[in-house]
Length: 89
Picture 1: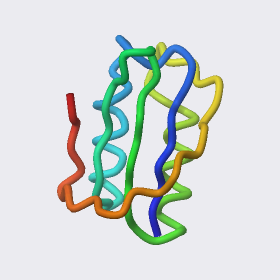
Picture 2: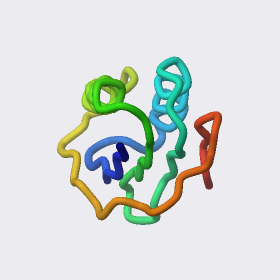
Picture 3: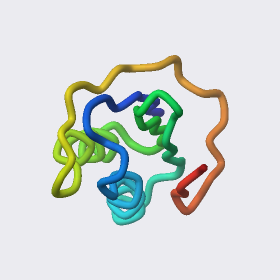
Picture 4: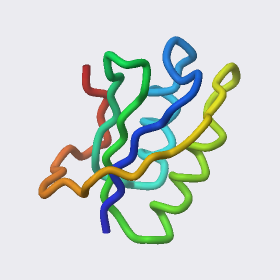
């Protein structure tokens, strides 16, 4: 299964990408996370439904200082071969 979401809120400048990368690596997920110019963070991940749900829980929680307003689902990506999970620029 694949997850592709846009995270809105106070999610840049608070260590959000690092938090997501570490959570995804602990879960053994493939994929990536990146900041977007509009202040959102984009996350693409691949794994089992159960593990992707755990990652979504981490996205809602975020690191200290983050305030997540919404997770907006995006169209699924065809390929995600970034393993281990990476931070993209």
